[in-house]
Length: 494
Image (cartoon, rainbow, N blue to C red; front, side, top):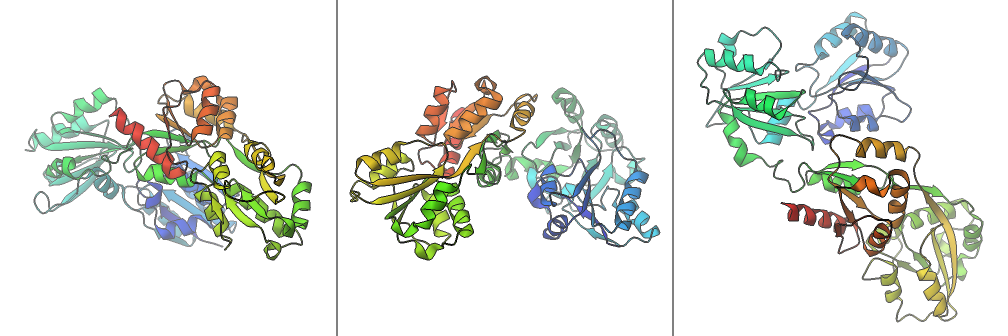
């Protein structure tokens, strides 16, 4: 019999889960999660792990507490590693205590893994410390739907109220009736620590009406006390340059993380919608024949990191290894260069501009007459490089190393993203393939009112040729350049 782990998911930002919580999730057979836990954390569990939503917004039927405990016990008795994933910390206004009791009564071994508690996340990400030498030395946590002794807690210097958004008018009335000044600062926070964090500040007297006017919905928490005055000075999260922006990344799954991480670090709500999937070549015959005579080539040209990866994977399957390589190596740009250097190989040539034209310019002073060149690349790509190198006298073997296609489910995901009540603010394209596939599954019209940022001129030309207006183009044709272009248009919009 294995353990049940009661794991705190943290307040919302998936990076705030503890190292131990992450390690346990990565070995889970079953994950029973609350909607308050960020769904991105479910990706940490193995692909074949069972995932069960305990209930909440958009979850369909909610399990009762008795049913949750029964599932935990039954799965553990089957010898499975079970993770009960709670938002925040399991032992602070969660049901972790009751679930631990049920497990103990059933004789099931369990372990509690603390999480960053919700009020700590709220404090950190709103710039409102719960205690402060000049404002508050004590804090009280309560729930808004429980029977509260207001005479005991009403004058607490800092009051944090969970699940009290819909009853806050009555709560404020009780606090003021016991001597709390109507001008006492108060703040409501929804989805704390997430890119969509929504914060509303007022006073005990004004916040109830502000909540109604904004139409703020649960889940949210409320902070009451003088510490709320510090928000204007200490709000680092809301001051991030992309805070509140919803930005779509269309790169392939497994390759979008670098872009998404950069955008999230700048405060954006980065949405990964792969418009391209990298697949093996339809026919590896030409590449296999080229590998068999690898030592006959003078130059090996890579036009993408994917080309490097699939070239190496095919080389590993052959009887040939890198010791047979005598060719000099050319890479189209820094990401491709990094992929080559990861193999402990040196790049001999790279263009100043990271497009085909820049690559050809780099070859301007290179003797090519009679030289053999191997170019492993995608099945569909521009013919500019091989055509121009052949014109200069080279013998160029273009071989398919991989191919691209629109991912399964791309159309459904596009409908979910672009059919939502709040549409994205910005969409990024990183290649002509992502543009063409996006238009195939979603249509250019779906981008109406959404600003498009392109990684470079070739991608921009493809987009405009398909009827898409491009608001900005990276000056340096890299992910860093793309992020700078996104920052540029956001700055110009303010």
